[in-house]
Length: 352
Image (cartoon, rainbow, N blue to C red; front, side, top):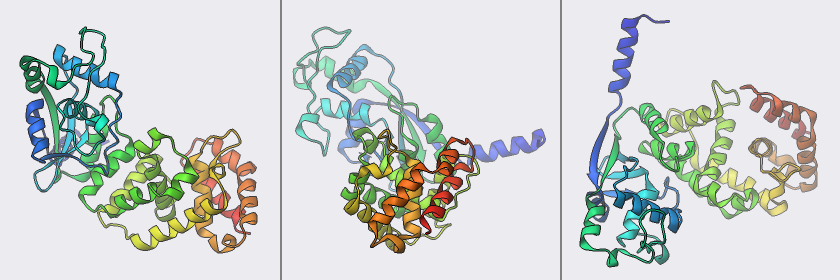
């Protein structure tokens, strides 16, 4: 344990490594910023606008009732523009109601309200049928904006987004990574996005709509690259391990051959898609298991030359691995070594 003076110094240094601001702004001001493109939604890390009409109506009703609105989070980039990080559902609802939401289908713009629980008679109303006073009431309503400046220490930016990420639909760890580390180098981020949207990859994973929207596919690919290039031993937990690797690659502290790594992974994905179906990564109960995905993909990457022209042998090894006592035993253990044990078990089985 360090003494109080040293602790006080560390607190001061950490606090000053983060540049953050907070403002109270009206929705009218945010609408103007959005229209002028000084506030924008970056599709690389924002999930789709997916609130139902009922949820959107309740949000508009909450504003009309004067109910306090949870804060939105933005990152100020080097051009002094604000990139929306959390609050997409709320702001998109406002922009849709006023008919200014960009790059969406017609049905997601010009919101028509439905029946709600408190204010009777909202159904079928649009912004065009509201009175001037009701329109103004929405525009002048205030929203807290949390602003993180890009020249803040990157680790502190990550911590802040992780800890303040308490909106109605919190961002996943991967969504936060794809936001924070693109401030350095977006190449790795873009590879995760490109491969995550690859048709062959979608075919062999069969992710649900929600998983696709919350960057589950991108995190699977990051797992592959992390375990392959950054080791199998976790200092704390898997999320910290993934974050550490993505941060170091983005800051160019670790070399990464973008072209070679991308082409190699796509080759492996195509091999599986062309010869097998999505059940290859699933248990006997039909559930997709990242642990099986990790082991099979890494073993195939390591020993591709043995199975490129022998799909039957590869399938036999997959079944042997999934039913092996070593895999089952490693999966039961709650330790930082269980990932290492599982993948090394796969290496032993496939290296024959």
